[in-house]
Amino acid sequence: MNGAADHALKMLIESTLAQPASIAAQTVADAILAAHGNSVQAILFYGSCRRSDQPGGVLDFYVLVDRYRDYHGSIFRSLMNRLLPPDVSFMRLGDAAEAVAAKVTVISLDQFTRRVRQDALDTTMWARFTQPSSLLYAADDAAKKRLIAALIQAARTACGWAIKCNPVTTTSSVFWTQLFALTYGAELRVERGNRPHLIYDNDPVYYDSIFNALELEFPRLSNQVRGIWALRRYAGKILSVQRLCKGAFTFEGGVEYLLWKVERHSGYALALRPWQRRHPILAAPQLLYRLYRQGALR
Image 1: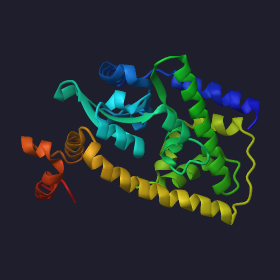
Image 2: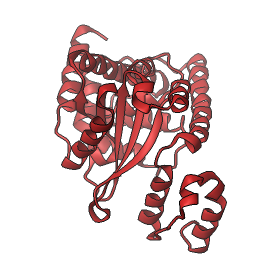
Image 3: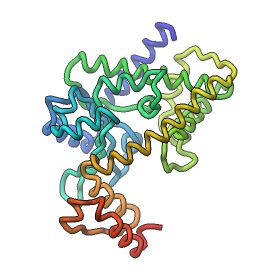
Image 4: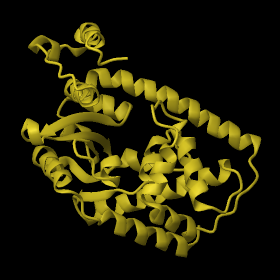
């Protein structure tokens, strides 16, 4: 990519980051800062609730930190996040009738920067942050500049893989939807088949601006590229399983998140006894049986 393309990407990303977020999103960001302010380098708001206002939906945040120990406090949780980032937690703010639900993902700025590079084995970081996000907080100008540079690199990485793996196309919509389908295939996700189209259709101007800013040349798909991407696809599945296992021990608020999901999708409100909240893994078989009997699970 030339200097003009880099400048165009930088201007696009900066303007997107500056877009105002909802009051609910800012409320969550303020709560995160109140609890962990000194350790936070930046807070990004992204995902489906940013793309479209969804009453009752879970707001998605990435919190970029300096040192895990300063944020988590717990040595065990800090170590697990360093070894297998990111860390995920669930929080609810406000009264039950008007509560704001949020999923908060935590990773160090250093690890985030490394995982958006072209040679990164993990595809999840650059796949998510090729998509638009809002910057709700930056600790200082240096942190903001590092973040913007990382998001530019995420776009470079995404487009690089799209160029290598996708069939020849001159259409922005096909370019992006094929890329998102590719990256979803490298994770364990339950998504509707039209999800890549929904993401593109929500903000086509943004994706078209990236596509048009770059001078794209589409080489023939080689066996070497197929092999390199296959490695990332299999590694992504393994990482997804590992993160699920880690989350069983580190997902703060995981029980509340499960209850929220069940109630939202089934209408069944599951009440837990204190010991079940303290020992969710031991209580899981009984809870799953109760949900099955009530028709909340199919």
